[in-house]
Amino acid sequence: MSPIADYDAEDVLLVSRPDQLRALGTQPRVAILQLLRLAARSISELGKELGMPKGTVGHHVKVLEDAGLIHVVATRKVRAVTERYYGRVARLFLFEVEQAPEVVPPLGAATLRQAADEVEHARLANFGLVRARLAPRDARRLERRLKRLVDDFSQADAGEGPLKSLVVATWSSEPPDA
Image: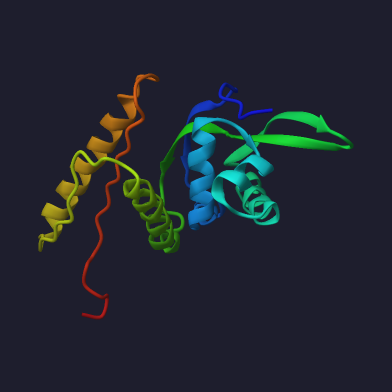
């Protein structure tokens, strides 16, 4: 059986619980969620696509399932074993990290690593890394504008055409004790 492209999922999930946010703090779990955004897959299929052992993938899938981010969307019998196909519980995840601020750096790093892996194999339309010293008021204003841009980008998804990606992040470039 090949990946299942069409299964029931909510449109949006607000990811805010600390266990959900921690579950997303590793690159393999972010990669699994990226693959499941396209179609539901079995642990075997995920392992092949990620180049990881099934046991390792199974562990990461269990963490994501326990956090309520993915679920079984189909099963099939393979000899005496039931193979499960996992899908995301929502097409789009929105993050609210006030409940667990300690997970922001690893979650952001995992997301940016995933973006970097994709960029290595993509034809870039535009990119840049810019540093600027901003007054707190200006930083808040810019972060609100970036949030609106991300919201506009995700709402523009027409469900057809080539898949495009956008990554946006702001952080303090100076060490905390500087």
